[in-house]
Each structure stands twice: as C-alpha cells, then as structure tokens.
Amino acid sequence: MVLGRVTTRTWNRLAPQIHPALKSSNRPGRVHVVQGTTAHPTQVLLLTDTEAADWAAATAAEKVLPADTPGAPGDQP
Image (cartoon, rainbow, N blue to C red):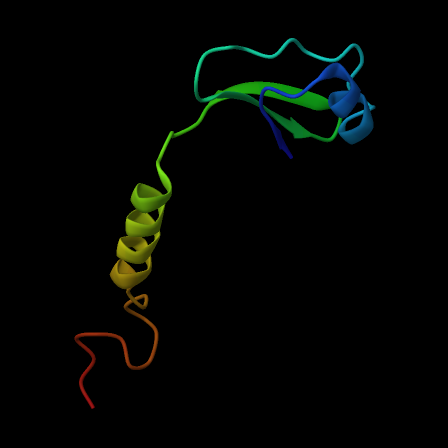
C-alpha cells in the first residue's frame, strides 16, 4: 500500500500494524510504501494526468513478446 500525505487517523486505519504512524513529508513525491509490518520511505514520479496517460499509452505500445514465444517478431513460419 502506498501512503502519502495522510493524516494519523487515516494511517492508523489503513496500516495499524505500523505504530506509531510515520510522519508525512511536505516534499512532493515523497510517500511511504507499507508492506507487511514495515514501511519504506520512497520517492515517486509526479505526473500530470496527461503525462501519465501518454506514458501508459507509450508503455503499452512498446510491449514485445519474448523471443521464445510463438509468433514473436523474427520467428520464421
């Protein structure tokens, strides 16, 4: 779970196993990634809605089948 700039009440509701709640950062893009009983401070990308949509479309368009998959580019019939 990714928690960024949440209140102590929200933290306690979503990640009660991490006590006390970690302090939020005011720096843009700083979040905590909670996995199990640990929380890791992490830097994430800050994108506008348009930038995120463009990135997702470009990423989906670049997907290529692995070379050992039948029908992959370069396979001979």
